[in-house]
Length: 59
Image (cartoon, rainbow, N blue to C red):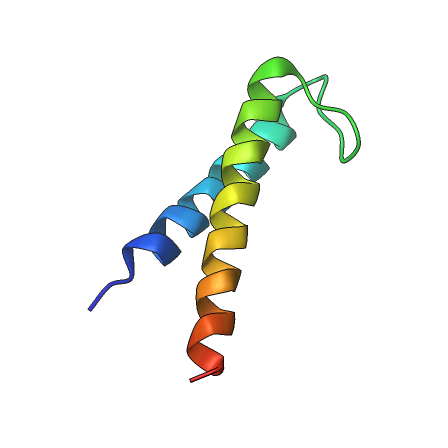
């Protein structure tokens, strides 16, 4: 069974990496407006996924 949260997290990771490779403005420290939104989405999904893993490991 596929994990929807994991799939969304991995997709956001790919989108973020692709954007950074193609954007003249984005670096690890500085992002354009679109890059900021993409990174925030990735970071939010990463946090949610990691929190789920922590909760599962506490059981």
